[in-house]
Image 1: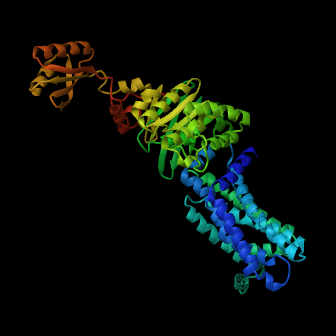
Image 2 (image 1 turned 120 degrees about the horizontal axis):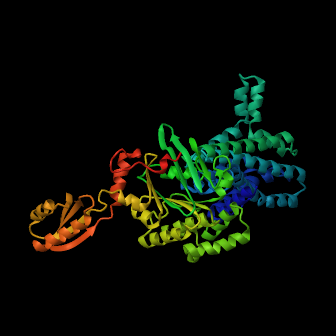
Length: 244
Length: 330
């Protein structure tokens, strides 16, 4: 626990010690704004809600989270600091969880900064704040799942670009698994159970469910177990490959 | 106290460390020598718990590194090869981080930071980002992190690599000053360093111990140990050589080299007759009226032993190398 907290603090401070954090935050907020007010067609719908804003989150994360997670482990391995880190009296799990939580907290900060949108719609109309809160929780959980994948894929390489490309590709699969184009292709020949499983693997499927206003335990569990699983895999990969 | 028993590390088909066993007690500064790729770093990585051994055990202050890694790691201070550090941190924040990760209280961290900063002379750069520091300072930060918790065991992988002569001297002094009551293991391929700081030298090659003894013993192992080096100024170098060869106290003549006017010879004395050889050399130089430019007894050449020992491998198959000492402890 102590180890996790120490790693968490160092990592989080690390984000703000470099321009990376600010670049990320600015781009995140800019894109979030553009998606909500311009592309999302907020003014055309004529309804005060943030559905447009949230519907772009999977795509926003798909583009930005690999850039955030790529350095998690690849950089430690490339620079050799992993040797410093892993010879401290802390466990691999401490380090993996601490790093992940810091990255997650950082995306939480980015997400929290979009609360201006929330204030705006409340000023402009009378939105269902329960739905918006659920959507924020769903978005945060989904960001964690993206980061979990990113952590895992960052641990298998010393090269940040490889980590970025891998994370982007794998995340894309997880997002697209719920797309009609994909599910239709599968449902054409596969039994319904399989189609359903594929859809169930999708970020979109679970995120959409949450943004309808209910944080269902199954949807939350999906994201949380994906996080747990990918962190578990990260720890195993680190133990096996840290010296390569 | 560290105890290493039958340590083996294989990477696929390659055996980096082969059945290595040794012990080191407090007060000892053990110099780990060997050519590149001999398994020095790999051994250190296993002792510090970074790499799991394929076979064998490492016990640090009574704690098995594999079974109780936290307790073992808590007693070790480690400077990895190249002193890796987080470039966007400062020496101060780095020390705070490592101290916290080691479970030190903030009061204790503060207290030790002061001591350590003074020891490695970091005052000037304490709040400067590490990426802006020179190599020498980075190495010192690495050392500061290794000794921050005042560990019983200090493992230093090439602590002076890449430093300038002054910095090397400082780091060596620092290591010597810390030796009391600690086990220090350092790796190097600078042979003088072993003499300058170590109480014990151990040569590994191809993952096995080839020599284990004091630096003086290591030097004494050289075929040059006790040889007489003489430089004379004469036009007739061949005549001088013949005269030396004719001496009863000379066993054989080694290298001969010409530096300007001087001709240097290495004379190997007949066993036990070194002093009479010295006298003989002076006598015949006077008789032949050569100017004696220098006359000295060779203490042995480290690089010579190093080459012999590492090229012949373990177990001392050659007469120049006696059987190893503690390799047989296990």
